[in-house]
Amino acid sequence: MTERAAVKAALKTQAVETPSWAYGNSGTRFKVFAQQGVPRTPQEKLDDAAKVHEFTGVAPTVALHIPWDKVDDYAALARHAEDRGLRLGAVNSNTFQDDDYRLGSVCHPDAAVRRKAVDHLLECVDIMDATGSTDLKLWFADGTNYPGQDDIRARQDRLAEALAEVYGRLGDDQRMLLEYKLFEPAFYTTDVPDWGTAYAHCLKLGPKAQVVVDTGHHAPGTNIEFIVATLLREGKLGGFDFNSRFYADDDLMVGAADPFQLFRIMYEVVRGGGLSGEVAFMLDQCHNVESKIPAILRSVMNVQEATAKALLVDRDALGAAQRTGDVLGANAVLMDAFSTDVRPLLREVREEMGLDPDPMAAYARSGWAEKIVAERVGGEQAGWGA
Ligand code: LRH
Ligand code: MN
Ligand code: MN
Image: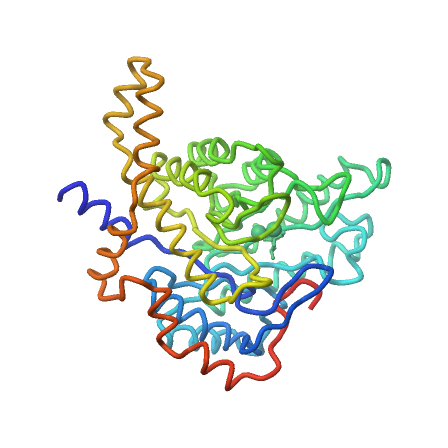
């Protein structure tokens, strides 16, 4: 296989998971601008996700968020996905929406609230059993707002206890992905604020526990690719929640704010063998003012472009420059790949997959956007505050 053919083969097998909540209405705490034609049910979210897969060929799974995607029959929901060429992906838990969680969920000082939160996590594993999903994605809004509000160490103990109970419930082919976030909604301490805390818990739990890197969950200037390299090296990178940030957890389209950072991250993924392994490439975005399906198409394409550039890095030349201490030469090898226009290559990839080379234009021509506006009246809010 030529090098170009190998790059194309890798791009054809990459899979990007889209989040159910990105298809619905969302906004900020100031305003949710409702859009016409948004899905009214989890099934309709899957119908839209099927379009993203149809036009990109690389988005075969959809992440659920419980209870946002609550249905009576999860096996039937999985069949609805299968009928459209999709599978259900990660099940995301939600221990942040109920009034009971004012002081936290699994870290709450009251054992009864902790029990309620853990029961929800166990219910999520039941749902995974029904849907065939392999990943339980955990993000905890737990934390404190004021120094002294609660005992930081005791909260870690409560967290560890809860995680251990849920870990024990996982099936052989299931894993737990623990997501960290610097701050928000808690402003003073967060109970899983960084990769180190997540890693420490996952290490203690065992091989079925891994860390999720949400690209929007770091302090400005954080070297995310270093975290990625380290977690991959330790076999603890479970996946990504991709999105872009200018300021905090903005949840903008991945690759929109800083395509160079996304390239650097994907280079470390490629370098660490994460492309063909078990790393899940998930989007976690909200499209508040832009059209949702086109924004998700664009996001999938942005991941593909960053991946293509990462695959094009001349690793032999880079290694040679690194070994001889050729600082500028090594940097030039990396920048050459980043500066390559990979759009013609990706058009070829799509044509070889029997797809339209331009997913955005193909979607616009398809008539789906007009159809859902005509047929769906009264769409749901995707999540936050719903
Ligand atoms: C938290 C988060 C987490 C949630 C999602 C909706 O900020 O990134 O992954 O499940 O947003
Ligand atoms: Mn996330
Ligand atoms: Mn987030």
